[in-house]
Length: 87
Image (tube, rainbow, N blue to C red; front, side, top):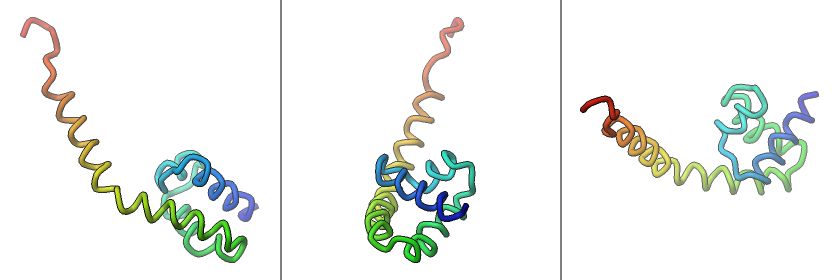
């Protein structure tokens, strides 16, 4: 049932501080579905839970540029490392 999935997603986000992307992967749905569930559907099911989840998602949104920068930095560090094959 959709309500069970929505509540499951919300509880997962609260327990793990997960991002929309992480939650979508965990539940096997698209990012758009999780976003719709958390931004429109959850408030109709449990408004208290909605506001708690919203705070976490707003925080994740506010630091996503930092996460993206770290990811890019790690990627380029891996490319720079010598392969050890007679360099």
